Length: 184
Ligand SMILES: Cc1cc2nc3c(=O)[nH]c(=O)nc-3n(C[C@H](O)[C@H](O)[C@H](O)COP(=O)(O)O)c2cc1C
Image 1 (tube, rainbow, N blue to C red):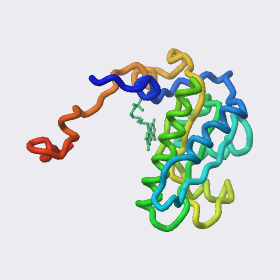
Image 2: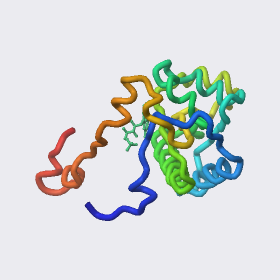
Image 3: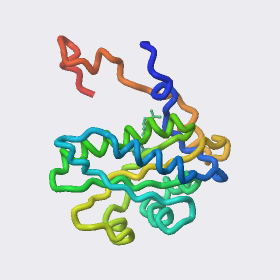
Image 4: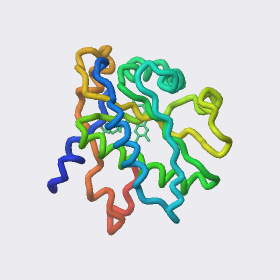
């Protein structure tokens, strides 16, 4: 495998977060700045964020929007960030928002933090609870924190946490020759 920059090679998405670690204002600001400087089509910047620190109102409102199974581990995260898209073209804004979140994720790694994103959330509930403007649509929640002890997880999550990570082989991603006919 080609050498990746350590910022990418060491990134992974844990569920075990250190429930005593807090997100400093400096680190919170660096994460949001990283997202802010992401590229976007026509520089439209169709991303909006709500960041809650553990136990504050925003954090609690984001936490209760998650399924009970995910709340089991997400409640230990130092911060929960709602990443929302702004604007009418969902496909275009979703693409740009994803890049902004990727930037945030790389910045988190640089700060010794970990991130796990969540797609299953009560979007309508968040619109109400966070009093979001009509053009802003919740997209994903990002749990951020310091790595915790996997042994603190329930058995089913511990198994998932310590299992091997998988990726498609590079040849299956290249749209040339036989690989172009690969269907997952
Ligand atoms: C958009 C998005 C949505 C995700 N949603 C969930 C989720 O709802 N629950 C969860 O446990 N993990 C979720 N994940 C984490 C992925 O399962 C994880 O990134 C993937 O298995 C690859 O693992 P890695 O990030 O450790 O490389 C999500 C990740 C992304 C990028």
